[in-house]
Amino acid sequence: MAFAALLPSPARADRGVEITPFAGFRFGGGFEDNTTGATLDVSQGESYGLILGLRATDETRYELFYSFQRTELEEGGVFGGENLFDLDIHYLHIGGTYLFPGERVRPFIGGGLGLTFFAPDGPGLDAKTYFSLSLGGGAKIPITKKWGLRLEGRGFMTILPDQTDIFCVSAGGAVCNVRVQGDIFGQVELLVGLSFGL
Image (cartoon, rainbow, N blue to C red; front, side, top):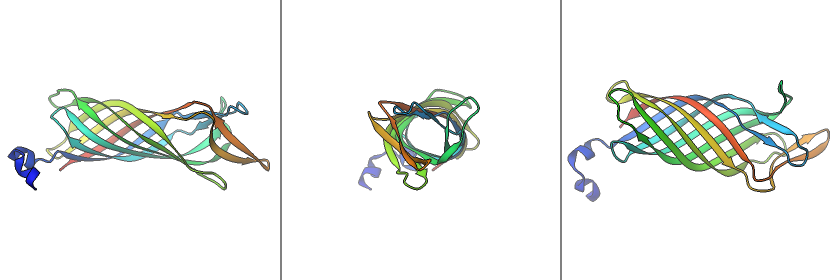
């Protein structure tokens, strides 16, 4: 309360908090097993998430970004392969955006650092969490004083450490560890969000 009293009245009246639920489409991503040489690809598909923003200046925002995709891991190939198991991929990043000047449409660039959480669905499959980063850009289009549209494309890079066992896949009665070495898992997401300012 004492801190709020020190702020100028316009800053107290407009807290600059923005909530943006979104829907998107995510594609890309795969693993190469260093032991067998097999390629495993993540199926493309819809994604959903939420962005919480806090105004720092007229041009900059702090943001907490969360995105979720329910997909499948499949054997690689020109025409695709057998689906091995269902896989949920979560991103949770802390970062921000920089907005460029604009009369109605305000282009922006943004990024974040955080975690990628892989949650496979199947017996004997363990969830894994790794460090990741993201970078993207798009545009914000105001609809009313409180509501706006957010269009964005964002790329994700997940750092996988050396000699990492990603998943254990039961196949033909044998257990096969999907093992990668110093690899990068990359995906791209295109999203549309409806923003509400507080």
